[in-house]
Length: 87
Image 1: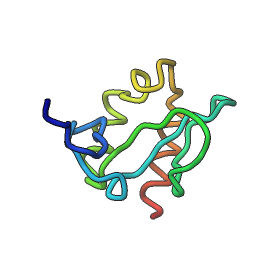
Image 2 (image 1 turned 60 degrees about the horizontal axis):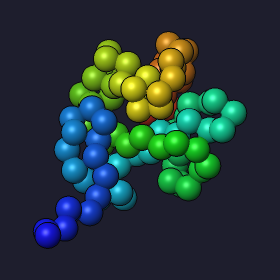
Image 3 (image 1 turned 180 degrees about the horizontal axis):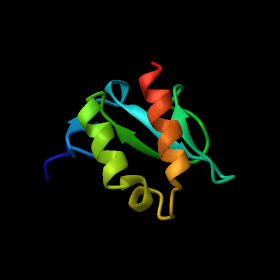
């Protein structure tokens, strides 16, 4: 059997990337949704590439709701947008 290529998938464009090339968004055990700059925060993670169009897709289609298997508030999406643009 052939091995799958290593890496992570962007939840917006579905492209495969190395983990270091993606930004991690985490849902903490307390239910907060935030960027994880270290990539090591406890909780369920979702990855997005650095393309601004992918971030727009993430917010427009509310893709974190599916990834985190819970409703994510519009406020959380707005905070992610602000954090992404400040970097």
